[in-house]
Length: 262
Image 1 (cartoon, rainbow, N blue to C red):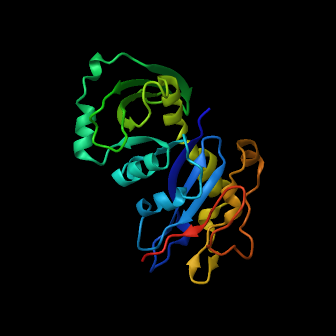
Image 2: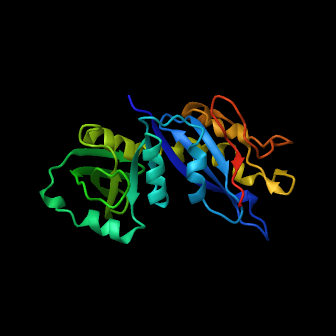
């Protein structure tokens, strides 16, 4: 079974001041909910330069890394291929690549996977198609993916249809359509298993704890409690003193290394 790692970031809103923007915390989490690495982005930077340093301490050989459209960068794709990893990347912010993928003859591509579910007062149908394509303008890309999501709000009857395009370095022999669909949907577990828990259960956004003059994330939250403990845990205030924003060694790798300019 392949290791699947999601890369995503969040802003700690409580760290925003009149003179400083909220700090960004890119996180690498496996699709089972275990945090593997975390970094604090420099105040005058963004998540993009943090991608490679975030993953540097992890063994990515034959792993699959999922990320949102922000990290669909040629340098990121090349970095993963160089590390022996695979990528599943959303195509959105690159007009030429997006046009190349969107204009494929999707009507002629057979349906590869379909699911139907009911949650959050809505019905949802997800349809996935995969097309092997060897001339994609992205490092290591072997296949294009189209995901169509049909959502009907049961309270209003409103129907929305969303088409999302992705690319992957996995060939038809590396992963089937069911696995790709599972990984694409599983990527957003980082929101439910980590970001939501740290915000709602541990009230991290309300924390004003600082290390020196810099906002400090509450590191114990980074271990991501299980869904069952998250439901029963009481909202807890951060400890009186927070760990400094420096590399922390342990079973989960480097958590709170800070990316500094220069």
